[in-house]
Image 1 (cartoon, rainbow, N blue to C red):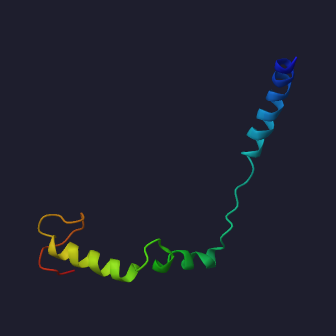
Image 2 (cartoon, helix red, strand yellow; image 1 turned 60 degrees about the horizontal axis):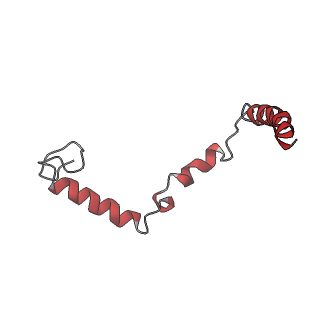
Length: 78
């Protein structure tokens, strides 16, 4: 008895769930607010400025071997 009820209700539920995925997706962040999300302070890093500086120094020091994969020589030049 319960299995027939499940088999009768399952197709409409799957159809409704499938149709809701076809709706238009609208961004909830306005274009003029996106610059705030790109700010380094929005990253999960507690001190992004210090990490960026340390990363730059590491790339300059290890640039002769490849370091983090950026281009440049080992002299620290940009």
